[in-house]
Length: 229
Image (cartoon, rainbow, N blue to C red; front, side):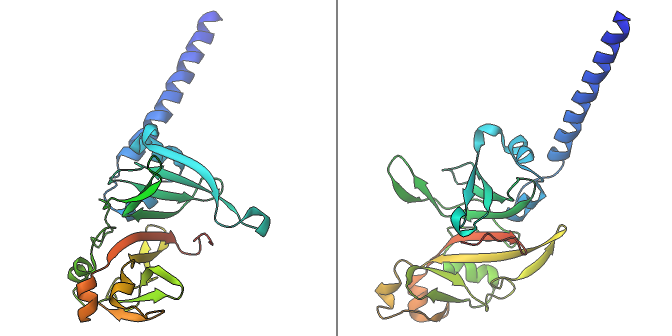
């Protein structure tokens, strides 16, 4: 009887180990080389297994005040404060990856200020946060239009006219459609357009070429799952 118990325990341990190894092989068999590839992760545990728990910080956050009906989301910071940093946004229970963001900036908590650090992650089309508008034009092959927002002097979104990388273009990828958004850093716009409030600009414009704003952030979401700010 004692021998049978030990045998059953041994078989159970082998089963548990084999499940863990199968999960590890499942994660290792795909390569994460673009921002879109992050949508292959099925949960936070897989993300930690791939990049290492020490390189992941996951917390719960709200994109709208809870008292206003805002829903909780999980966000995972991967390789924070490095050129390989990326923000992964999960559903409330962490079982579905909703979005991925890469930024050319990170917040230096020690110095209490935002620092520039161009990002190494690229999209399938070859775009990366930190690229200048002139570099985006080379990737796109054609002139790029973008808009500035009234009352928001520091930010602007790429706008329809971005060739095959149009603002909010849906594409088929994996089982879900993805929505792409690209944000330009327009901090010096008043230097070139002192009276500008809200306008569509073209990368062919002489002043825009001289200005040459930077692609500050790339955000990619599953269709219909973008958190509401």
